[in-house]
Amino acid sequence: MIRGGARRGLLGFGLAGGLLALLPGLVAGLGLGSFWTTLGFQIFVWVTLAVSWNFFSGYSGYASFGHGAFFGIGMYTTATLLVRGSVPVALALPMAGVVAAVLAWLVGLVVFRLPQFRGELFSLLTLAMTFIVATVVNNVDWLDGGGGVFLREAPGIAPWTDNNLRLYYATLAIALLCVYLAYAIYHTRWGQALFAIRDDEDVADGLGVPTLRYKIGTFALSAFFAGLVGGPQALFLGYLETATAFAVTIPLLALMMAILGGATVWYGPVLGAVLVTLLRQLLTQGETAELNQIAIGLVFILTILFMPQGLGGLIEARRQRP
Amino acid sequence: MSPDQIILLQSALNGILVGSLLGIVAMGLSLSWGILKIANFAHLSFALLAAYLAYTLIVDLALHPAVALLLILPLMFGIGVGVQWLFLHFRVSTFTSLLLTFGLFIVLENLITYVWSADTITTRQALPPALRQAIRFPPPLERFFVLPPDLLAFASALALAGLVHGVLHHTNWGRGVRAMAEDPAMAQVFGVHYAREALLLSGLVTATAGVAGVLIALKMPLYPSLALAWLGIVVAAVILGGLGNPLGALVATALLILIQNIWSVRMQPSWAPLFAFSLFVLYLVAQPQELRRRWQGRRRLAESRREARP
Image 1 (spheres, each protein chain N blue to C red):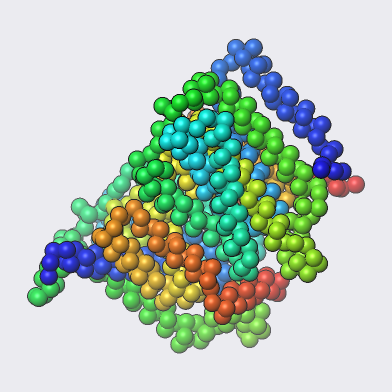
Image 2 (image 1 turned 30 degrees about the vertical axis):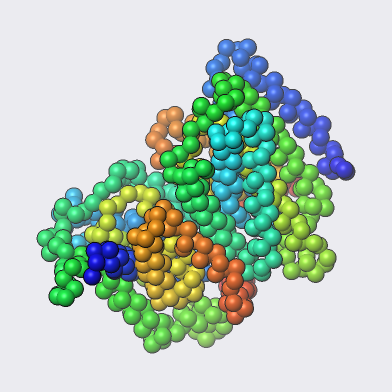
């Protein structure tokens, strides 16, 4: 299954995962509070969102705003299964990813066949999809119905939310898998196909790359991870409402992280997600939330204007210089 | 007429009036997207910024709304020129402009929250009485009324639409600008100075956001996420109205809000957004062959323009 370049990375990922898994023990040993595990959890959620956005949108050039819809669907799938269905948590979490992936697959089936959905029209379509999903969830009573959903009373979730340690490990596993997948795609024929689509889709098509299959499959996989990581996020929040679960700022932030870190390299979004999450944490402690958002927005604008390849692009350029 | 019918007709009337107000914003977006190939979502933020500035001028400095408009117009013109200069200088593609203006959108929303707070504010108490009293229709329609700011917005929308149409189709400058939209490289060969006309057009378009902003401040309570609330419907209207067709954008906005209002009377108001967005998606998916060709043509032209520009 895993060949060549993709296999070489396995050892590195295993080591990184082992170290991050030991971290909570170290933190507890040093007598530091659950603040650090919560921060770790948040970083893993954003790494998953940014990286999964990037291995479809960054690699193929189809910038999607649908990540907010998939993340929100993941949160609401978990919440609905737990609260209304009394489904065990271990089953409700993966279902979140499956539902998001199915929606993406259905949307992709229609949209990627139509030549008008390239460039900005694809972005707008996925944005409209987010609005539509949010409106439906907001109006269907067994999903939300406008009053919000409380997860705290749901059976079996107490051990997950007690000290966030389980959430830390769950999101660590998801993030590792997601980053490894981005790495594997980047180094195989799959990635080459997506890059070919980004460079010139018509030429790629003409040369026999099955672009439609790659686009639909990767889009669904990308949505799967956004939905999957929505589950732990729903448990963490304990209360969902459509205005925040489907906020436009969520896909935008994931996109900003990916572009800031470098959308053309596999590790770019990891850098972007870690940096921006830490920056947000740092800024919300001192100044007001607005200044924090203004700063992030300005950094994003300046990055696009002066460093369109992001941090990852800079690093790659330095590495390739003899 | 039964009370039920009166409510329905009155909300339809309000829909057209509010629709023409947002239609002014949609016209500007349609022009900058269709002609300058800049998907400028910050255009909505500029309108909201103008509304907040108008609030400060009218309430805090006790100026007449007309004076406020005169002060805001040159400022918005300057902002439009500045933004376009950035786009030209960095040779931003349509797609990148979408990302950039979304960044600007976030910055402006938070800037407004920071300066004016997240509370809902209104100019209502500071307005001259003539702008506050509802105007009743003459009999037999005496049950219906309009508010003066609504009437002003409607008249301004019509006047601006006429002006834009007249300038684009009946002046040499307008013909040059339209040629620029069709084929920038060819237009330059025939003596259209691309950078200069683009800066001027962007300034004028942003000035119309200033007009809309002052009217918005007169018409409705303001809060920072208002621009986000308009985003869906305005963008849908710009596409449905035909990109680069300001009249189409105006009519589409008015119709969309009219339909939403009627829907809200008869059915649950919270379902209302579904209509506009579903229509938008269906239209994009089922675009007739002719329109599809135009979209692709535009994209090719935009690319050739970027390469052709010195």
